[in-house]
Image (cartoon, rainbow, N blue to C red; front, top):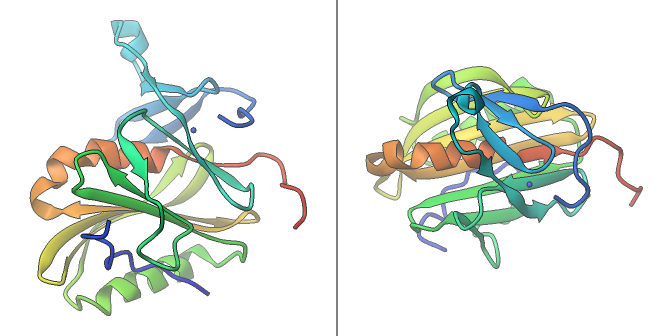
Length: 208
């Protein structure tokens, strides 16, 4: 099984069939509720009443298996030609060039606790002092998974990882973002937008 450690690529370098149903909600790490709509737009809960402009997203990637899609704000993330980590299906680079993201998709359903433990162990195999800053259950697009923030030093570079892990009948997924610890405060909103752009298909895809 491929479990990403998501570090070697620091310097390396939502749509299709729209989801049908009611608006969906997700929470950010600071407790704000994000409303995700079927037309690809999103906004913070309460913004509509305040007259704030909705934030539109577009389909940025459709998983090879057809089991997930990724919807992102336009002109913020660029898909890499190839991933620097062989475990990842797809990798993206932020427009500023200092924040990275990728998705590891597995068809096998791995227990969530086991999945996150393996992922953390892989980070600690690089930095044994890696520290879990935050860990909590979070629901994104109707799917409950585990949200984890980790600080680690990789190749002498202090990094912050902001990840979402999900496992279920659709398989096991790691949605991973990371940046330098010194720019994390500036990057975290776009990192959240990447995590919140992950959507699992509502219907089973065609058999391989």
